[in-house]
Image (cartoon, rainbow, N blue to C red; front, side, top):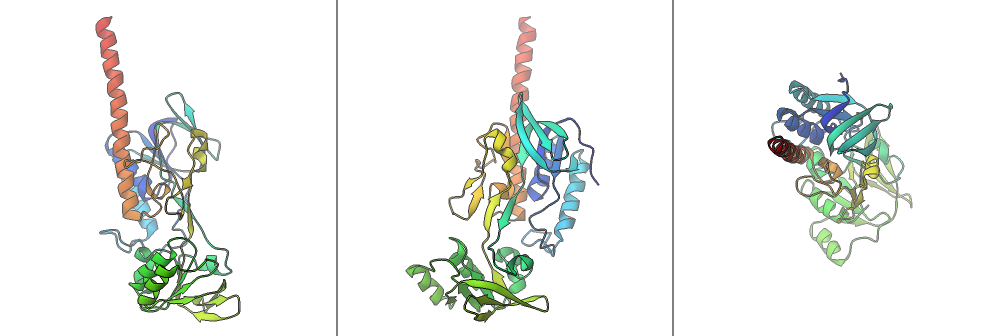
Length: 322
């Protein structure tokens, strides 16, 4: 089901995940005209087993969570539209939003909740296991692989941290240095103290049998048996369509990827543009993303109220002086 897109709205929300739908719900309940434009390509598409760590919704299928969210937004008069936004440009005191199908819509304010893209290492067999037994987040997937033989592939500055997190879930953790310089002296001491084995050498492929990951093969042919492999993909915000507004993702201070900076309320450097969810918080899980969407929506509503109040005061003064 998709709604008919009107010509203009108070707020257009680009991205229909937890952050976008939460923001749209807040705005619709504030009697704002709002449209959510969603491309239908969620980040968690490879892993549809369940949402974890979300109070009162533990284990719910992501598709069901989104269906409920869309219904709630529509229940307050908001629109949810299938489509891909390709460009956002200034249009007077608002924005002109262009979709891939050639349609356009005007918005007074813009809330961007397009999430991010996981850029995976180019290792044969890895992408096919992504979201199944090749994982990234111990809070999203850790319980499901508890007490198993888990590998952690060094791919970035947070990889040792990731290994220590997974050590909480299993006593059998192996850290693969892969193409990194390996842990420094302090990190090596930490890994050793926690009983985490360090394996040097480049990882050539993941081994699979009977549709299950069974090991990690090094470039010298050695196979290290593992039941699951944790990686830290490079995280890149989906925000290319904002370039016309002077907004581009920048390198995150942690070094794990690129994000769109914003203040605590989601306000960006581009006037009238807010962001929420993973596009601005690379580590946000579903609950945090939804909360960020709500916070940004409240800020947008207040910004619109301030504008409307200024206009009302000016009109009143003009009438009185006339």
